[in-house]
Image (cartoon, rainbow, N blue to C red; front, side, top):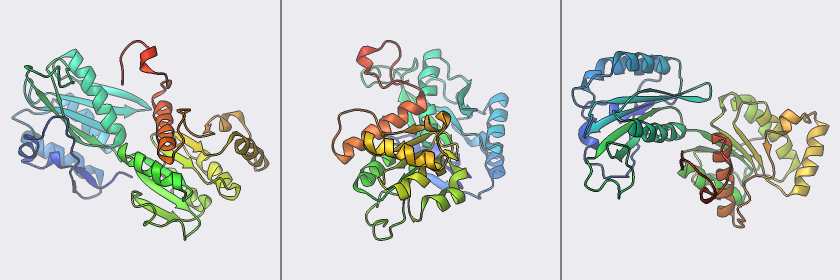
Length: 328
């Protein structure tokens, strides 16, 4: 289900609210609307004339946009709200795991950079303002003495979920890093004394339950953008958590523990029928990239880096040793 909010950009007068936003500063204001998706599409039909400037979304982009909204396809709309090309629009949607780009902002390089950034905001479920040059310049140095193109990016997608099993010290660090990346964080542990909001204030939700009922009740909400991180080190908890995660279409399943623990876990999983290569290939265990981290915070960064690499299909190679586009 999508959240019953849409970015405040669709409210008349929002241009004035964002016009004076400082460069490189993102904002995430939302207003509540009725939960039915049809309202969102109808709202855009009625307010398209009131969006930035006097520009109206082209019929092809508008029709595609409303189709995506009605089918609950994750979609983001990038609109030039100030500078050369004001009113131009570019649509980025995630269809069958791939990104589809429709429209243009007037220059191929600007389209490339903005579509990249729009896809990133869509992945995180965020809305905000970005500043560029008319040919896609994005660094402060490149923007000196260059007309500024202000682009408003509106995402229509729920934030990705991260379920963390185990109310341990590593959980607090991982939850903090995940929130920075835009995840909706849920902490789950059956031990009521440990699974408290006081211990994990960064979490959007703290659940006192076992993995099996958690996945039975809510596992269908997990998709390719989401992550399950199992940090328990307790076979009574992590084996059913792995079983539950494998029953979903979640994009990342990471399990903490030493290599010795991992081998024992594989034996226990085989005992409950989880032993096919296809199933086991989905497990990132031991969890995280080998960054040499030792503290919970460093481990959290290693875990999130692995999640990003898995999601994008990129290797975790230093950019110094590669060629081509960076951070794309």
